[in-house]
Amino acid sequence: MEQRQLIQHGLSSLTVSLPRKWLAERKLKKGDPILVKEEGHALILTTEKTIERGKISINVTGLDYGSLKHYIQGLYRFGYDEIEILFDKPTVIRYKTNKVHTISSMLHEKVNQFIGMEILEQSQNRILLKTIIKEADEDFTNILRRVFLLLKDTSQTLVTGVKTNDKLILETVLEKHDMANKFINYALRLLNKYGYPDVKKTCIYYHIIAQLDRIVHAIKIVALCSPPQKKAFHKDTIHLFEEVHACLVIYYDFFYNFDRRKAESFNKKRYSVREATWKIKNVPLEEQHAAILYSQILELFIDIIDARMGLEY
Image (cartoon, rainbow, N blue to C red; front, side, top):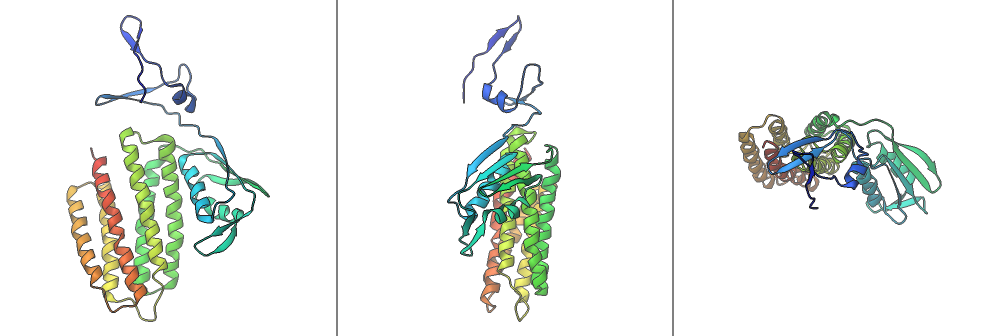
């Protein structure tokens, strides 16, 4: 934190200079409007102009598939509008499968999860990603609602797949995970570029959305661990999946229709699910693993129960 001196300006006004870096990032100049808001002992300055992060160039030589994927995703979420990717070798190793993939194919797959960004140029040792749409901070509320609806839909699809022991339904969970990840990426990007109108809530929203990202990924893992079986899933396993999904719906309602009693309802059901998890026995090992993994999703929700409470004040 930097200390600045107040300067006498006229007979009754005091002024303070603004940091050059802050002004330059937002391309502010003399005469541009600045919004001033009192927040307790703090005075918050905001502007409608977003931070211009522009272009970044990175050399990804030596990275593996997973590291490269998260590197590019992180730059998109951070708000860069143009990402130049340079590499000496056109392939990367994917440790998950121990197979080699081309950087080009990996990026084409990943960019499908970036709203508004496309591959514009590609050569032997260079690929250029660039945004092609105009973003708006007011998109955030609608995008967040979309994330929640996709999360609910993904979870419900998983439950249906387990109840019907249907391979095709379980496979659609992976597709819905990718769609949810697309909107999560965009929501985090908007927060990084514009922030939330109530500045102190920006980090809380970011934390909640990042946790939803982990939850939808966990649902995907459960789907992968729940292959159709010769025998249908045990009724106790199906009941457990239904109860976990019910908890997810409770949190959604709690988030959009705040009532502290709903948090109590969530916790009561959470402990009931925990007890039911350990009672699932004499079932195939994969089924038991899937039940345990899915019940653990509730522990991820606990971290954003208190975050939602914080948003209320």
